[in-house]
Amino acid sequence: MVKHEAKFHTKLMKWLKHNSHTIGKNFLIETKVVRPGRTTFSWTELSEKEIRLLNMAKVNKILATNSDMDRTGTLCDGYCLSGDGIMFIQWVRRGNKTFYAINIDTINNELDKGEKLLTEKHAEEICMLKGKII
Image 1 (cartoon, rainbow, N blue to C red):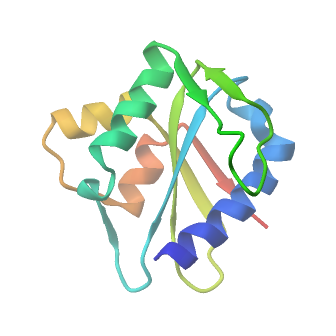
Image 2 (image 1 turned 120 degrees about the vertical axis):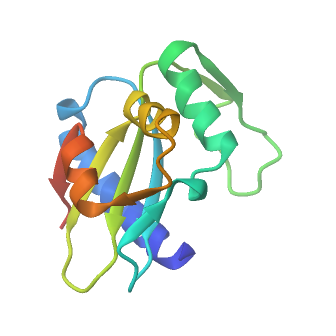
């Protein structure tokens, strides 16, 4: 799953480089994939930490510090993020390039309703943006 998610994330970042204006100026990203052979995404795969950070980006500010001790180097010493929290999700299957962007407010509503699984059809209904990666 990590391999699929990393592959999707790389392609999504290229897409966002040219299309982020369709979403907004500032947003926090969580990338998820639905494993091959599965038809539903379990909301439990979105950890409490991920949900908390997506919510913080929406209603507050996220302050983060990058360590100067990182061997690979850092872009900067830190950052402050405030804007929106969005989960990008893709169903992994041969030839599928479609992804869905779901806002944290919508995710919170789904969790509040007690939903346990997300189908691709329902993702299309609740998404704020449907896109295709190359």
